[in-house]
Image (cartoon, rainbow over all chains, first blue to last red; front, side, top):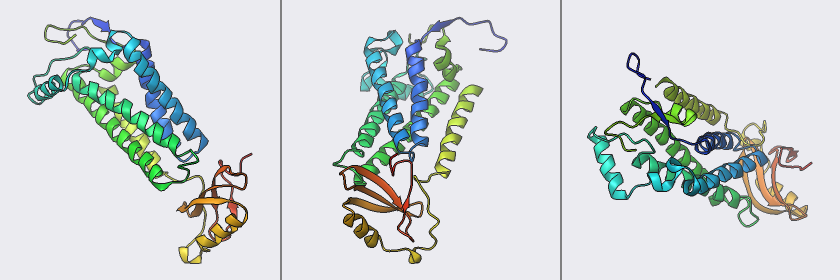
Length: 184
Length: 95
């Protein structure tokens, strides 16, 4: 990792389920977006994406330590405190998700569910061809994409701040072993 | 940090390209709108055929119709605004 420095040990953080769920979710959202005018394909991709998110929610209760919501979702007060530390360049490095990232995860999960529900609604007899449902689905989808962009920005920011490649970590599951000031 | 930036750049360009190519299920080479037949005329033809119309909008130079057909099935169908002929798409007619 650090050129010239001694080899730092790494630990396993993200289990296989978390990593596969993350990247299939990326693929699902991208494919759903790209197929948005492709009718049937779009519907099935949307439901598949919802299924990934529902499975991830279940894993958030039954999975390995760093996969659990209980491990990374902090109280609003603690999260605000973390945000202040970020602004002061004084936040600790988190081995799991940091508190701000945690809320982004919850938000992204919620948005996928809302996008899927509104999309399904547009296929029901009751709301078939109804303009506001279509616009709701589009608005929610655009919001989701905006949040994805923010999520990526947060990942890049955190990676630079703590000098570690978080994208690579989501592929190989490993992160630098916790140091003295890190939150494990 | 290169992979992080690379992945972000790829995603952003992927979505931007997708945005540029935003078209519906069909496109109609239908020229200026003044030369089109009235939407009401299409609606009447379809209603006479036993369809229940939910909404007609313009998409890709076509009339896009959300309706229930004579069998009560949900239909999303495209029609050419000059000829009012059906423009076949992946969604209608069903094979």
